[in-house]
Amino acid sequence: MKMNQPTYRLLGVLTATLMGSAAAHAATPPEYFFGRVGDALSSGKPIFVARLRYEDVEQSGLPNRDGDSLTLRTVLGYETGVINGFTGTLEFEDVRAVTGNHDYNDGVNRRATYPLILDREGTEVNRAQIAYAGLPKTTFTLGRQRIILDNERFVGNVGWRQNEQTYDGVRLDNMSLPNTTVSYMYINQVNRFVGADNPLGKYKGDIHLVNLSYNLKLGGFDWGKVTAYSYLLDLDNAPLLSTETYGVRFAGAHPLSHTWKVLYGLEYANQDDYQNNPASFNNDYYMGELGLTRDRLLGGSLTGTVNYEVLTGEKGIGFSTPLATGHKFAGWADVFTALTPGAGLEDREAMLVFTKKQVLGVDVLRFSAAYHDFQSDGGHIDYGDETNLMVTADVWKRVSLLAKYADYDADAFATDRRKFWLSAEIKY
Image 1 (spheres, one colour):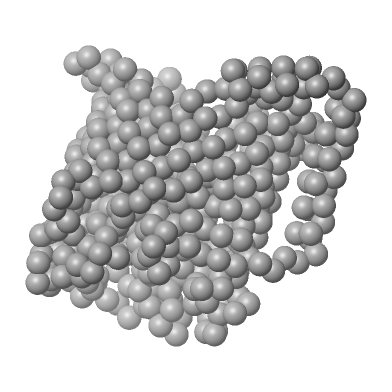
Image 2 (cartoon, rainbow, N blue to C red):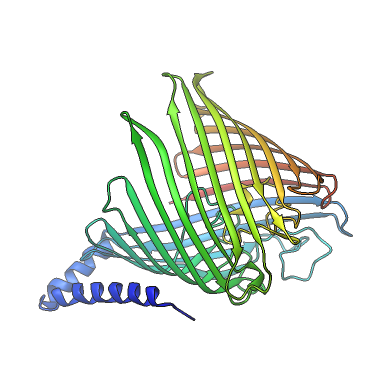
């Protein structure tokens, strides 16, 4: 593992802080110390999640075009209470196929003639972290942790898949400046959602993430969040994904009346090859979004949005986002999740979401529908289009049910595929 001088300084500050805190309490009687530990453990909270999911995929062009899986994700863990500014979290995750049939390709099981369903069986330590919040408006987090930045377009936990993506490293968050959050993360390993025994189940190297956000408040209104970021990825075992990305983002909402609200978002990023990447390229990302929400409509709320997103390509290499929660973007069929086409990608999306609370014994009922039109950024290639439908229900605040459908109709890229999911999750 390689670390530059700023990283050493950050770890030195963290170590000095933690040792100073320990020294300050060195004279504390043992019975008091163990009493505090007991209080921290007893005031903590258990973590339990169980999600049963059925996934069916039909993909043209494969010898076995139909694949399906029934898997159970179970998470068990514990988060302590606070002791001298410290909290600890330990969490285990297990993914199991409920039936004996493995009629799908999980990336490792040598069933390449079936469609991909990347929910690999396995048991692992999902999170193992210590957080320290003993300094004013500052939090240090050390260990295996969950990291989600902004809308997850660049850095996320891939929470959609059964195996969550987590990060090994150190994180610093500071909110000393008004309306401002400064975050820095150094990561030397990414525990990817595809499973530890996949050849690319872990990204190893030096990753530096800087995220600066400011809540823009003018005229008595909160207009949204302005974010500037720098993401430097030096990946030892995936050099073609080693990139440096710099960008800025603005997203928010503003009320127009008691029932109407406008939504908006703009983002731009530039990406170059970085460190051990043998290629040479310069790509851009830009996004624009506009939407309207109407409350008190049929006892619920209706939101309509249009989104235009572009990831450019140069020299046959597309803009890459290897740490993203890719399933949230460019259609749920995951045609463009792994890699952006070399000619780039333009995604024109229109979405409607209707939400209603306290209906038919359900706390929150939500219907979503979206349509995507995919084109290349260069070369005027029509990739195809996709339709997405989803119904979710939150029941008793701890149970959620989901039915979801994606239909990608290929033109000059990939092949037709349809996906269908049913899931039930309980969380404590």
